[in-house]
Length: 177
Image 1 (cartoon, helix red, strand yellow):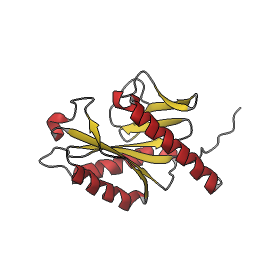
Image 2 (cartoon, rainbow, N blue to C red):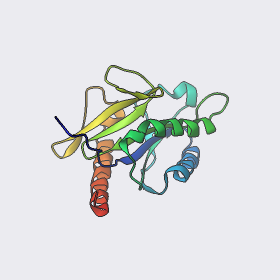
Image 3 (cartoon, rainbow, N blue to C red):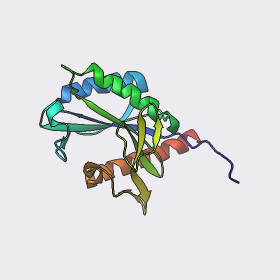
């Protein structure tokens, strides 16, 4: 029989998508007031892998990744998603989102995103929130799975997540976790 152990805390990261970088940066400021200091803010990246958000938000769309210095318990992911949904609502206009925020927790072994969309490969967490295993770490790099979103398969995003993982592991060593 195994002995249950609480896993090490994870690195909180988020993807923000919007047609307006200024709005994204305002949302980042709101997120900083909730989750603390940012230790990674990506360059502005084109988001052109899907037209899914175009009707609601407009186009062209852009993305930024952000990660926070403070590590979080992995089980906090559902609560984090609910709070980021609140930030999205703050920037909605006429019932349409103008910023999409997808939080995730990055650990040594994987990247798990939070979503409200049910699917066969997404275990239910609670309160309408599901976990989406997006990337796994194997052979010295994050690797996509058959259901991984196309944009998370991109080399640039994989390298960003690999760098974030290296930073996370250094942070764990520095904290003695």
